[in-house]
Amino acid sequence: MKLNLKTVAMAVVSCFALGQAMAQELKTEVFSLLNLDYPGLEKVKALHNEGKDAEAAKELLDYYRARTGVKTPDINLKSIKISKTEQQWADDALQHTFFAHKGYQPSFNYGEDIDWRYWPVKDNELRWQLHRHKWFTPMGKAYRISGDEKYAEEWTRQYIDWIKKNPLVEISKDEFEMKGDSKLKGDAENMRFAWRPLEISNRLQDQTTQFQLFLVSPSFTPEFLTEFLLNYYKHANYLIGHYSDKGNHLLFESQRIMYAGTFFPEFKDAQMWRKSGIDILNREIGVQVYDDGGQFELDPHYHLAAINIFCKALYLADMNGFRDEFPKKYLDTVEDMIMFYMNVSFPDYTNPCFSDAKLTTKKEMIKNYKQWAKLFPDNKAILYFATEGKKGELPAYLSKGFLTSGFFVFRNSWGMDATQMVVKAGPKGFWHCQPDNGTFELWFNGKDLFPDSGSYVYAGEGEV
Image (tube, rainbow, N blue to C red; front, side, top):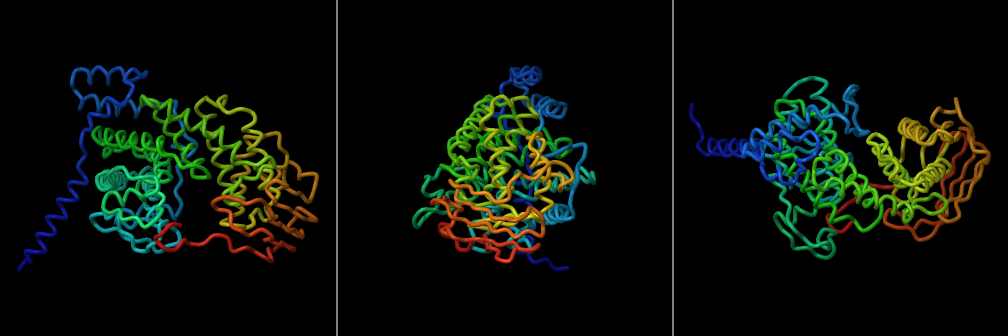
């Protein structure tokens, strides 16, 4: 049998690259980032002080595997469920076919030696969202449900591979925001996508779930733990100095830095991270929400996103004992936001698609209302929509005007047979708001007769 030398050489190089990506190194610098006086880390501290860092890392892993008392609302390890879609994402990811963007299906394959800079369609969102690693959590669920080590093994490989191929370098704020004709190349050009603050925050939040799902795996070694913690610290430390200026991005980032400070209290900077997130949320809820409950982007979908950001912070606070860091005014404003959204929604629980809005589903919204009903048990209208009318009461009015936000709702009933018009006629909005004053949607007898087209897939690689 004849072998092509070029083919053999390429195979050797490929295997070497894969081996390098798989290699897990003990990152001893992580011990300087941890508060080794934190309760439970006594053995870790003693071993580190003796210069036995490999043993200290093993002890640290044992500590995390035994740790209780820190919780997140995103995963219940006693009741893990995986959808058909998530299972597909997990299985595809084993072959490096990554679900990055639902607007580009089928998903793209990023190569045996993963090319994190592959840009098959010149759409910024496709490249940004690749770095949100949406398939990582499904891989974790698949691992926990099946017990098949291949998911954990591949996740650790991809995690290390991402670290090695997406280094953190400094670029200017204008370059991050893609202002002007950028000449960036290589690692600097890649920074705009891999290390955009919104994507950093996404990973900070989701990796708390992935940490919990994979922690029991033999592939989650002491060496990998140090790689993970060092990378996580870099994320949080960078984000806190590079927040977005305003808007929903800032809300997402502050809520997620809260996650970092809450889930990893062992870091020396953990309290600072958590406080920073809480302070921003307490400030921005007064900046971004009008007195009538409307979020200042004047977009129903992003209004809903803002509600859930503010609520998620409360869920995390409730689970970890720091609800008192959010004043009553914060809760009152969230309740006003929910009532705003309830009023502008149609009888089938969907929302008008003004500006860049997207449609929600009834299933999704009932889940939201059920969560909100726990936060606001005395609100009978929220309970009504949470139970599809089985409990609670409808608002005592039909039509409603939100004068500051400029949303006006006219209806003759709250039922499916209603005639309902929602009109947008508000102030100059921001970011996801479009110049669409005078736009309306008309619901009649079970159907939206004048739907707005809402958002679309962004095009082009320029500033969007």
